[in-house]
Amino acid sequence: MRTIQSVAEMKAVCREITRGGNTLGFVPTMGALHEGHLSLVRASKAQCRATAVSIFVNPLQFGPTEDLDKYPRMMERDSKLLEELNVDVLFAPTVGEMYPPGATTYVEVADLSGKLDGSSRPGHFRGVATVVAKLFETVRPDRAFFGQKDAAQVAVLRRMVCDLDMDVEIVVCPIVREKDGLAMSSRNAYLNAEQRQQALVLSRALMRVSHEVDLGERDPRRLVEIGTCVIAEEPAARLDYFEIVDPASLQPLSEISRGALVAVAAFIGNARLIDNILLAPR
Ligand code: AMP
Image 1: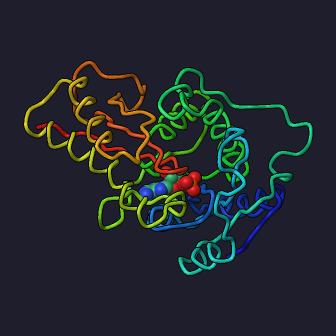
Image 2: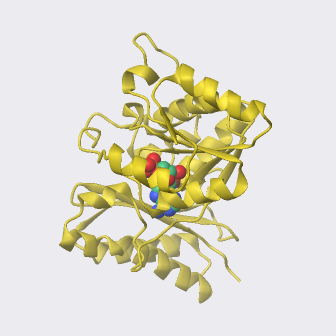
């Protein structure tokens, strides 16, 4: 595995790969890798001749009071994991390399960027879209792999790729969970043993809603109420949002349809956790 820090060198190496006719898969991450990330890497390895992974904790997508400074960083361990999976290229630029002084250009996906996580994290999706657009231009992958875990991010990036005529196929992989249902996340590292148990309320609320849909409930307002009540039963959880929306427009639905996105965000202690499911009503 080659590890590269400079944009220029990354461009050169990626062009060399694709010039030879090899398909290039790309997995952007912020590191502190877990099985969720690794599932994306495996999907890329299965679908593409060569795979590039980036590890970059992107300051642009963190708000001023968020966890940028304490976000877990474990480059040596991550690098070993990727090496074991036979990743071809690891791109690990510095902040200065990605955002040289004087940079003033941003990618703003209007409207979508203010929904779900974007509504409680102003500027978050501008940061995400800007860094992913820059990474796409550096890597120019045939396919880029993202997790369904970040459902709003998927909607924003699909819109960006479509609107800016970007030549990359977005592949979305299912949420990888711990055995007890907790969605894997680098931020789970913030939880102590007690909070780790309390965090199960997110997946429990989603399963409850899915169950109610199976039983025939079709009113999104009623379903949101049910999900919100489950979260409220855990006093340690502070709800950010619980919504049922169209997965592409992120607009709240007035009736439940196949593929409706049920998304939740809640704080457990200082950790902001997110989770979601796609409904499949019979
Ligand atoms: P992050 O490092 O948190 O920016 O995540 C990098 C990529 O991994 C994103 O596309 C995430 O959606 C994806 N990802 C994170 N957690 C999971 C998970 N539990 N299952 C599947 N994909 C995930």
